[in-house]
Image (spheres, rainbow, N blue to C red):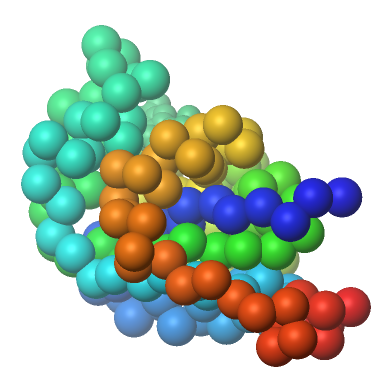
Amino acid sequence: MAIEQTLILCKPDAVARGLSGEIIARLERRGYAIVAAKLIVCDAERAKRHYSEHDGKPFFESLVAYITSAPTLALVVEGADVVDGSRVMIGATNPTKAEPGSIRGDYAQTIGRNLVHGSDSAASAVREIAIWFEPSEIVKRSTDNDRWLIAN
Ligand code: IDP
Ligand code: MG
């Protein structure tokens, strides 16, 4: 078990549909802590850096257009094994395959509008958090006021 941080994005469809509160609530109820939050209209430069692994794929241009189309709520979320744990909560990339009870399984229909991003590894999380946040924007929690400890 490791205390990790991960990048979660409530993508433009989530913000537009009023689902960012639901997404945050689910993460908080799990015991994960929000340690940074920013509502931002992502520009193309940041979008291309964030999704660089998909550069050249057929959906890349539409993915960049989608993520830059309207405000995104970017979060850094902290907790025990949060990278993998939050990915399970988010569900499969294609909502058709996402389990009921997952965010995508409960609220999304199509792969092109799947509501939420979560880093897929600890290394990806470090890379992606640096794309969206300055270190000074991320709160450091004190261990005696630690929601993770309270939740466990
Ligand atoms: P992930 O978000 O579950 O990590 P990735 O494979 O990293 O999935 O893809 C990043 C995002 O690109 C997806 O969340 C989805 O919005 C979009 N995407 C992935 N594959 C397709 C596709 O085949 N068609 C359209 N959009 C796609
Ligand atoms: Mg991914």
